[in-house]
Image (cartoon, rainbow, N blue to C red; front, side, top):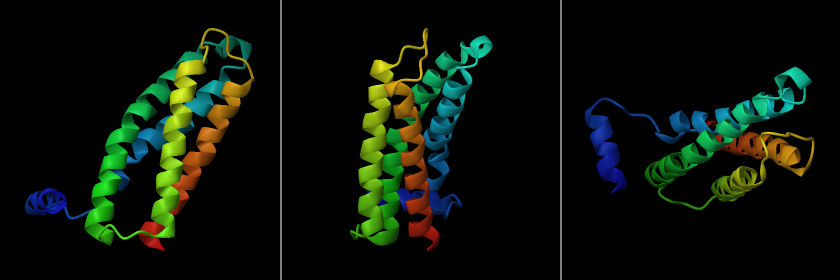
Length: 141
């Protein structure tokens, strides 16, 4: 299946990995979510907590096609070979997905507080940074 997809993309002139283009959705949404969450602690900007939550929703939804594209690229480019960075990315992706699901379940956008949920937002950024760094190392050395 992987080779069929890449053969089709090659026929239409697309010769690049698919995964990097899709990573901007969950990674960007995590960065935005944290920015809006922190800004919501300014009393007049409290309403931005809901915007941060919506970023988590969109980022969470974007994880699934991003992971699928990563799997396809891994099969196509690396032949499914297990490497430390691949395993690390898989672990970090699972942790980020679980953390975002937890935020979706626990967050109270009407009364944002600097509590455990806010720490989860901050942890999500660290996981996103780890994913981006390990992906860059994997792709560009």
